[in-house]
Amino acid sequence: LYGDVKPIESDKIKIKNPKVASNGGAVPVGIKSDIDAKSVSLLQEVNPESAVATWTVPEGGIIDYSTKIKMKASGTLTVVVEGKDGKLYIKTTDKMEVALGGCEG
Image (cartoon, rainbow, N blue to C red; front, side):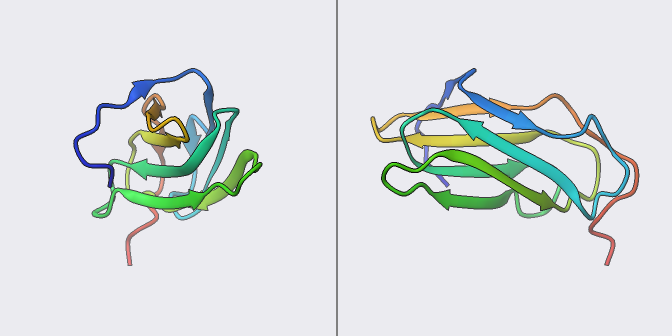
């Protein structure tokens, strides 16, 4: 998605997700950041396609997104923020348990 650019770990990215998702078919995820950004991408490690969503941040826009995603199994979420300074910032969650997979058909 971003080539071989090395991202910078950032505490300026906040990811809100449950520690245990009872239904992998509708896992709530929230993303907030005050980084001056061009785009925000949400990725996960367990489904065949790792990219879940990418948002373009409009000029003067605020990064405060929420969505529901599918996860077929337990795993981590990663958010990548492409800053207007040309740098990539990254934050990864601890492993989230998924009780019932959401990609089973």
